[in-house]
Length: 182
Image (tube, rainbow, N blue to C red; front, side, top):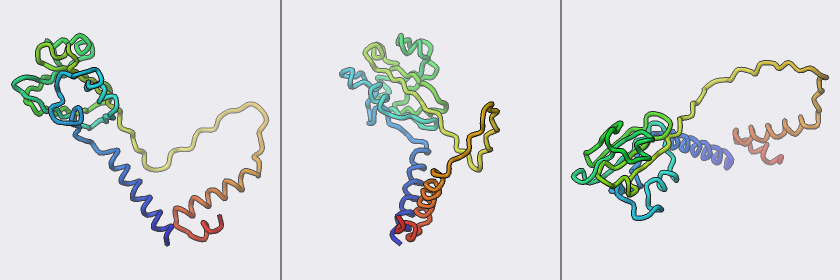
């Protein structure tokens, strides 16, 4: 009975982790409101925060800032490096900017306020691609041509493999008699 409860609990945890890691999220830039500002030091930069974060396709970055004093510009890498504000990919001035990360790869953002980018108010995020989940049975690998003698399988490893598989299936099925055997 206890092993069935443990198996059920394990299954619930695995499903909840899967849901947690696959759902899109709204991510507050810098981890808090009004963090879109000139950093006080290198360690306070948004890029330090981004390096410690994981971004996935489907996530949305959220900025809060005073729209009277600042803006968010999405730019290409060259403009990010040179702080060029003259030809952004997109401009956001609403004070509550949301940018959906719809493809894998780097995204570059700089401040639209004069001189802010040069003082470190910029952000690069790298978005990881989503893993594709395949359902069903994978096709068997095609046979490989091998020139040389065929090697006969040994029987010593088969007993251990069978026993290990029995243990795994017994745990998953919650069969107490299999566990008592071990």
